[in-house]
Length: 103
Image (cartoon, rainbow, N blue to C red; front, side, top):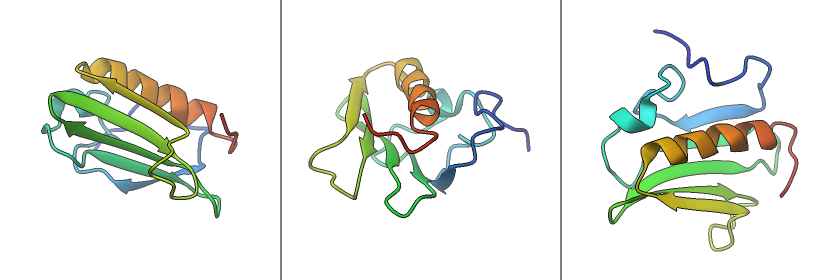
């Protein structure tokens, strides 16, 4: 099994919680994923860690940054028909919040 080279080696503050489509090992994970509600969830290792969640709803991919399990008020979100747009944003968020920064 390979490694997803878009995930920086130096970033260790994220744990993959749900990854049936190979985010950890495949750069094209979202393009190859089924269009289903639950696609990816990764969580920060801190006690109040952020959650990055990706799903597919009604012809759109949706991704959220969730803080303190407040799903009603995401820190950030994006909707797009393009899996590439969503994938790129996930990598941006991983880097942005690598040191537990907020907004």
